[in-house]
Length: 253
Image (cartoon, helix red, strand yellow):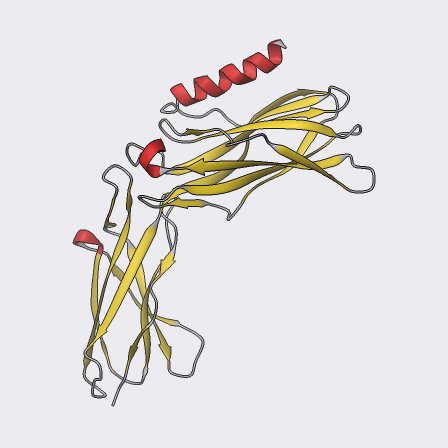
């Protein structure tokens, strides 16, 4: 009972002290219970400005007696902290049922859970696993993922149509969710690739790399050589997911 209470206190303390440096990954337990895998649906979680985002976290664990139940919570930078929206469900697999995957469902609402952008970045999965024989394992930072500010990217290539050999101007804007204002804002000083796909091809190739300016603005020029599609491609950062603009077709005559 004392151990269970300390786990709950740890969760509250982590939420309150989220601005401090997180400790190194560590585990405590009794018996032969082990965590073998942690997965977050979609890998990372990108959150916009108005819509709540629901995702699942799965922790796979094993014990020679089988797994009875699990608890988990998530914490991140600053005040970042989330609990499951319901009970964590464990499903056994294999003929001997000594391994189970325990899944928790989480919902993050930027209008409720985030008052600014400081929770963007690395988040951690913290889990407690109980076995049927009262063995257990308690793991801080059992897994990690990125909580990111949803990104958008636009493109416009003009004029269209254009004479072969003339100049094409390609513009666009890289923006991302601002959780403090509830709007999208320009993501500046970021390298963004301009890519081209010729008509009849399925493959884009890099033309050049441009750095986003004020308001996330992108602008460059190229010479018209053949019909095809131009798009911008942003590789992403730890706080912002990658994004590609849809191709904008240019008819070269």
